[in-house]
Image (cartoon, rainbow, N blue to C red; front, side, top):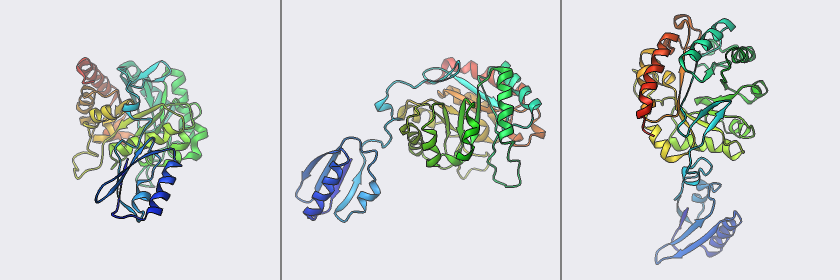
Length: 334
């Protein structure tokens, strides 16, 4: 990090600033030019508040030379991280698909879909027990009962389960959940992320609707800074001016993130497009672009689904999509 001071700064304030920075464990290289003084900071600057420094009377500008995320940064962890969920592996050349209904509706519905997606090659079962909905009048999920049904489906099929947490008050219900999902709306719920950092289980972190890739990685950093290194990143589309799709699927995020981080990257083409007809081509494209996995919504009766039926595949459509995905995996860009 580089701090450029204003011309003829108050020397007492400069010394005070340098003392403060050294107190943070940083080394300082001071360079005095004819018109400006530059302080070069060496060490872990991830905890340095750029805005607070910029507000100081003696500071002209502050520039970060390295990225503020350390745990998630490929520069500090060159090898791909492999997340293990039971016998399932994600990352490091391992590809896995998470599939299931948007929301858990009943034992019969969930177990039927779970059996179908497993037969088609899915490695994990997804299902929403708690549903964040734009309308307060829409179906909000079965909540605790939904998690019980997911655990029953896991017992019947052997598939690890993935479901979303919406509030820390629900955390006690997730003891037996294999992967905890943090939705797009909670990507920057930092208190939640810090608490999840104290756990020892995988966290699936979805990109926020309007978040940059660095903001996504900084959210991952919150979890990892707490000690939990098991983070799976999920690209699920971002909000743009386009209205033909529910969101705009940013497939360029896959190679971009691959260069930035060692964490596994999966793609959710269901939420990204909002249309079942678009899920297969986007799933194939994501696999070809080098994603480590997919998250796809599957329902045995999409027309009567309580949540997001328009973007859900039937079991038959999912099986067809899986065949197409498997066909491109040998040629994927990784």
